[in-house]
Length: 437
Image (cartoon, rainbow, N blue to C red; front, side, top):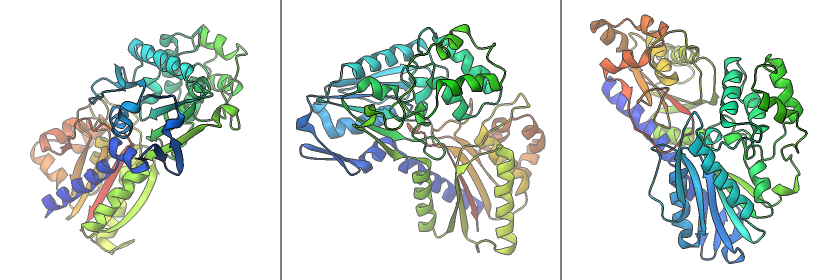
């Protein structure tokens, strides 16, 4: 019984992956009818454009680019996209530039410089298609002088160590960059820009995804300086960063700026779309299905305990739904690392949940990343059920000790309960599936 429930959980997760497959995501939202490219409700008459360029950055960009090539073929004049090492796909008209992620490298900077040059060269009679997916912030590194790439990396490290949130981090990064915060759109002006976005950000904020290279930016240099002051970093960041933030350079383009008059930002894939697909699969398998959240955040082990508690309540009282039930969540939790083990937020989620569902029959909890990687491991996540702790104990594994040491990978590995998908070519955050039968 537990084995079949596990297979169903993995089928539901696979449905989410399929919905987030980058090429399919693009083709669901963009189509071609003869001489017209249609993106959502906007129509682009291709014969009106002299050149069509494709640029962008992100872990899913290679597969997104394949879809664009399928639509436009030889109509593409040329272009370049920055992708993470190994996240490639065969392309004929668009150049692939493999570079470092999550730590930006010189190859990424060279590619970003070439992308900037293509944008600058585009004119009023040209169409620029920009592809943005998870990892774009690190994969599109073009620091604003006098900031060097190493200085930008050090500033990012200092902000993360101080507990700055993603919005604060992006505010500073946008103002020490030449492409982020709508500045790529400014470089491309007056060309027409169509940006296709695969979102890995909770809430799908356009100015947050990839630091919003073609989206209006509401933050300012003054806010960036205030963030450094708030965390006591004004005197700790490299001098070049202080110089840039105090330089009096033109700020990032804001809402209403003319550079956005011919820009369309279109989200073609997101965690919400993946969760919706998972829910459809769960219903098709006969489960009463409830989506708990697509903005999941917080400490992984604590969020896992809440999910486990709901599963226990369903099992014991039939509330809020009578079994068979599928609960689905999406988002991105965090892990406060206190131990020296190996794992990721999804594996830690599953391990914490395993402790709280121990002994419960017909309960399965799966947590996995849609990009196929979880932390510094080769696993996407892990799966647990009511027998997990008993099977672990039989192998001499103490679940509480492994959790305390943040060593979830080595806990699940001998149980064969890690989820291995390999690189999926997409990235729309994480998916959690709870089944109760």
